[in-house]
Image 1 (cartoon, rainbow, N blue to C red):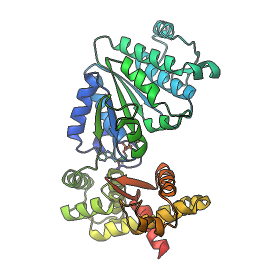
Image 2 (cartoon, rainbow, N blue to C red):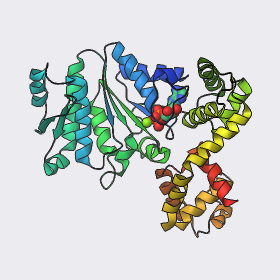
Image 3 (cartoon, rainbow, N blue to C red):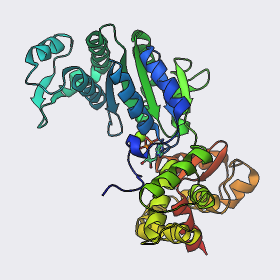
Image 4 (tube, rainbow, N blue to C red):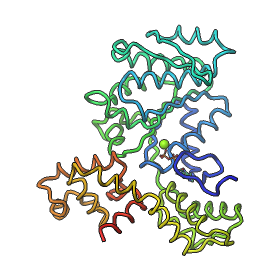
Length: 379
Ligand SMILES: Nc1ncnc2c1ncn2[C@@H]1O[C@H](COP(=O)(O)OP(=O)(O)O)[C@@H](O)[C@H]1O
Ligand SMILES: [Mg+2]
């Protein structure tokens, strides 16, 4: 049977609530050929939102290519991943459309090796030396092919997990993407990414390579009213009562982060067992269960920081007291470092490991269950 709640991966419409404004803006920009930056910490719902928007744009006849850059480590992989996404969108499964594969290939200045994946989609390979020198030609050609396939209809290229490109090459690839985005005047490129510090460096402020190139959507948490109503509705559809105060408790205890709210709601639902309602006690028990299930992986994550005692001390300090003043003398003293640079380095590393996050100006532990575990361990 389907579950009452879902967490851990992008959600289908059944598990999706609110985001009405964001959905409206995103689809309007996509169909209008305007670039968009979608920013939030991890697990706030970027990919879910983008998928919904894609579905809407496609229903209206638009062409949308979706590339996940998370596993991309160099220029060649980047170009290959984007080209593949465009081919999936433009060609679909091969068989019926071999002649369009030919014309697709004619549109590429750098000739790839072709292979067919099991699902019938086309995969590309490039000579590494050639592709690393001309990766932006490959991406530029892919954008042009996408545009042409769209005809007069909207065309969209989504680059999910875009923060990955910040770490490619010696200076990151932000500048190269500015040139590509400038060229793509009628295609909307959606740059979506977490690691706010990284994404902001690419997009915000005068020196940022992608500054001012499109509309920025910053995803915040889902408001309590909408999220609680969703939690109540789903509980009811599974035969359980969840009153508003308890729904709110789930929301707050999970730090309001959509992913953790759904995770805690599911655990509380399970803790309720056969009972007809989900109570405060179930929420408490549900929380403990999540912490217990993850305890060994939390311990491992903390141990993995062993090579960097500064990171461990920053983490312990933030567990006790989230703060915006990470460069204050008091904070530097509490984590026993001589200067602010050491804190910057530690926060960047902890952010990359998803252990800490910035909520507004506040540096905090990213995962409420991990926070509870560490607090408990620290006694
Ligand atoms: N609109 C939404 N309504 C309810 N829950 C959501 C919504 N968006 C995201 N979530 C929750 O967050 C989780 C992660 O969503 P995802 O789209 O993968 O986030 P991101 O791409 O920002 O990391 C989902 O599994 C779900 O539990
Ligand atoms: Mg995502």
